[in-house]
Length: 341
Ligand SMILES: N[C@@H](CCC(=O)N[C@@H](CS)C(=O)NCC(=O)O)C(=O)O
Image (cartoon, rainbow, N blue to C red; front, top):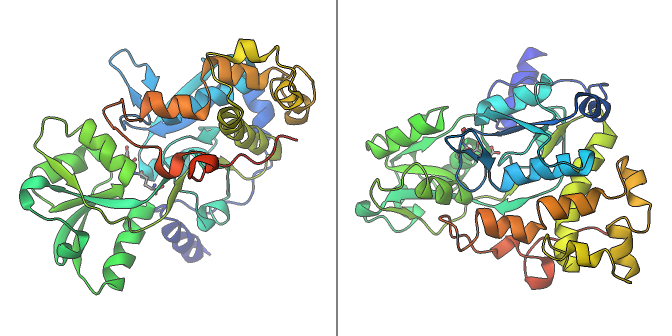
């Protein structure tokens, strides 16, 4: 049995996290009773989740956590953050230390099943890439045969890396380091030729930890699909619904043209779709188990998906990310809110 659990954890890109049976605990009720949402975030990834010197967290993933709190409590500040490494995040969720993971976590079959979790939507479509010091002159991942590769354990990154080199009949030497800052020091010191992670992570560390430390090139290849999004424990469908529909609502708001700037105006709209969405016509709040103004609160306090993307990782931020796959489906992207109906 233990062997089976360890094998499942490894397949999930989860290091030594054991598989657990679905928990019967009522997360939704527990969160409500304690009065805040406890989110597992990154230890520090610019644009996604990063604490400043005052301990104030910002980022796309932080905004998602706060949006869940706005939906539940009408107050986006009713949150607490648990910084986690890739390896710690799943243990934190399984043990009940956190209520939800809002931290660049890839949605996969093994995580959705064996690890005892439910995946709750995608807040950033990504793919795995490689970064090298520009002075190396390397232009393509095809030139990496025999390279030493810095990678974090307990990630899909580690698994995809092995698959990709094998498929392309190339070899590599992994340098596995759990802590991101230590890993980046190793990369900076030339202990590895290349650093691999989600392309958004590469852009984040280039703008963050590696800023001012030489020039770094993100190679053009994307070797995997990394749909990043919130993850909850098995066993509480109501909590899953709230997390899933909060994220969906931020996308729906962008589709409907509702933003933090015009949401008060939109309350006066005659459009029946907007009236239901903002709770002027009741129904959705009750269905999700929260106040009818839940989506109004989310959009007023956090904004629609596009607003949080632009503010945290968009072209005017140090990360300078284009919407790309994270544009609405109506603009050629993959973001598609299933109907509020
Ligand atoms: N999306 C991948 C990788 C996620 C991941 O943890 N990436 C690293 C590199 S950007 C990270 O966030 N490290 C920060 C940390 O461990 O504190 C997964 O879910 O397994």
